[in-house]
Length: 428
Image (cartoon, rainbow, N blue to C red; front, side):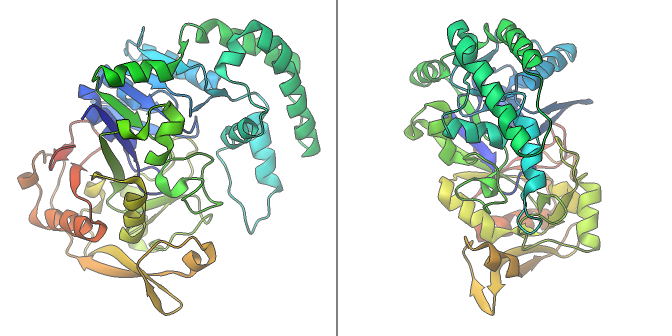
């Protein structure tokens, strides 16, 4: 399968980084196609932990990493990640490319995110990560953005950058926030130019040439499908197209180039934040607290705690249908050890009606009561499992029940955080 897409099936934090890293051993190119430094992908290689926010996870396996045009680029974050990878012994010389069409997060975007968060109604608030992703994407669609190509062009940079920084300050002051130092920001941009120039290229051409040559391309989504700006739980979403639907606009590859779509789901489900956004299967009890504790459910980027709940097959069916999913990778099943029974939400009760689809109406989704199918739990340690038959019978039965309720086969099961702690159940 020369072109494979991997994205999250839930509200993020599904373990996409590990699955991408696992699959990338045969990839020539690993491509981030949307989002920005609001993503956090954690990968364990032996005792070493890598927390990546912009660089593609597949870079660790030797693939050429591509930050494609659909990503908004925080140059400071990328610089720090390159330094971190180099210090941890990852040789990326000549193996990282940045799209010259990617938009650049400017110094006022983060403060503006935070000022807008503070100004929103407490009843209808979607707190961002405060890293300027949504405001940068907003400027992109208002024709007020700055692309990497613009940054690297001395003539365009001289005409446009100061104007954008001054305009950003006007908006910050309108929100009651402190302005940025424009001269300092201009000097910082000159430093970006120095080290970004060797990395920047037309990644659409790079990827088209690779596709036509039959190279293995692994497309890596950030955040997750239920945070998609069009199809997620709006407005409690991210600012980009987070599923497979974002590939064509995020890379320049036609969608027909994609041979296989894999979605990653936890064996349970989580959502960042204490209250924001609907969560029908939230387990606000000892089981939920056990999942949070054992699963170490705190955000890679923000450190915020994640609410935990039972696997939601209604939401998973919706995501798989929209994105043409071929197989699922199921992560963190080991966290469920010792919980009995295990529960799978198969439908919602909304005002006395059984609903088997995922509604757009957030008010209805807030009122939804999960209808569960219970499956016997397991007590065995799973970390040594590498083949289907190594999994205990009840763990296999839980995976089979998820496959039945979602209607998509599970090809990989993660039984621990490390790269090798993975069970292959079929072609992935």
